[in-house]
Length: 143
Ligand code: CMP
Image (cartoon, rainbow, N blue to C red):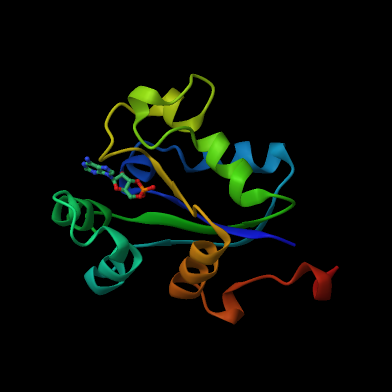
């Protein structure tokens, strides 16, 4: 089953949006395979956002994502990577449709509440960066 790495960013945790976001994914029909509240160490943030290291906003991005706890998750289900991106809405909340998570809860591109993997390669990479095997539920073995 396809898996995606989804993370409620520090602004979303601070604004008590974790429950709302988890509920949207549950109600959609996806399955939570891992979840933890954590403060991201700087090295992990730099690696996670490595593809943006030459961008002018990189430093802000790293300091923001390490500024407070995030809620990191693995969600699984059919086409979860693409569907989660639709549920999240455009990266820039000004372009995100109402009804999407960013469309409903964010106004700034730098504080856009949620991150989700954009491809199967990045999902695999991000899952491995944030979770070890023991932290992940294997529903095929447990149910
Ligand atoms: P995310 O999906 O976590 O992936 C990279 C992040 O960079 C993105 O969400 C935005 O929050 C952030 N980002 C993109 N463009 C800008 C920008 N121009 N200024 C600040 N942050 C940005």
